[in-house]
Image (tube, rainbow, N blue to C red):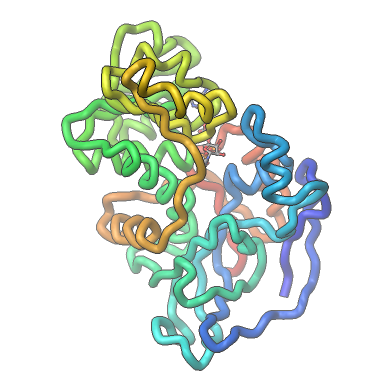
Length: 324
Ligand SMILES: NC(=O)c1ccc[n+]([C@@H]2O[C@H](COP(=O)([O-])OP(=O)(O)OC[C@H]3O[C@@H](n4cnc5c(N)ncnc54)[C@H](OP(=O)(O)O)[C@@H]3O)[C@@H](O)[C@H]2O)c1
């Protein structure tokens, strides 16, 4: 089978395509033929060793000092079960599934082995393989942080970076919960974020939300362009700042923000639990969480997909069609 691997940290040119032996599943594993996967912000961060402010050393220690320890990137997939170990109960050959190996990676390949409980679920039948491959990364991150914030109906949330993979899911989930959603994005993405549920759109190229006097119960920051420090006056008393792309300043602010300002900073890695992926799948099946796909690339053009995601301008997800 073919897989893309990362030779070193660097630009998309460090990605190579190689032929490797197709793995065989153990007793409690399945082999999935990948039909679609994504290239997302985590993939390009890991490829380029581009970490949030002050996190470079920690990032390299966690992922590999001179090159990614797991060279095959790719956090999410949708595909078809082509083999199942003798103890597998939940799936059989031919089942259509989606999965979120997350930080275990390995989805930029034609096949992937998964433990039957490794965040793998039946593909929602109203979704194409491309759509099903695209829902987990943004959806589970948004849901993790919304739960940490205990966002509830009637509260006001501001989503900074509402057109990205995480932001577009956050807008939809917050709207579903019954919160009033404001979105920070550029003018070209205003119609998209309104269609997802934003009641108000602030074009960051022409207006600074921090200057307009509006306050929110929750601010979700997905772009790394704002810190708690420059958002705290836009947060109400008891407000929560979700530092989803947090650098060291917001990590430190977690310690003292509540005592000093009565406002909480929530940061750190999103959970990658079975329950989060299951909920995202159920909401996608019910039409509550709609996949947002920007571009699709054939497998052999995966480096071009990396180059596009590197621009920081993608809307929702960039899908790789591995098989058709
Ligand atoms: N904590 C965790 O566990 C966790 C998990 C997942 C992701 N993350 C992090 O979360 C961040 C977002 O991830 P993502 O996948 O959603 O990114 P993404 O899809 O690549 O985000 C791209 C979007 O960001 C928007 N954007 C860029 N600069 C902006 C600005 N100044 N104001 C408003 N919008 C802006 C762009 O819209 P325009 O073209 O309109 O600017 C574009 O649509 C990344 O830093 C990622 O590493 C963290």
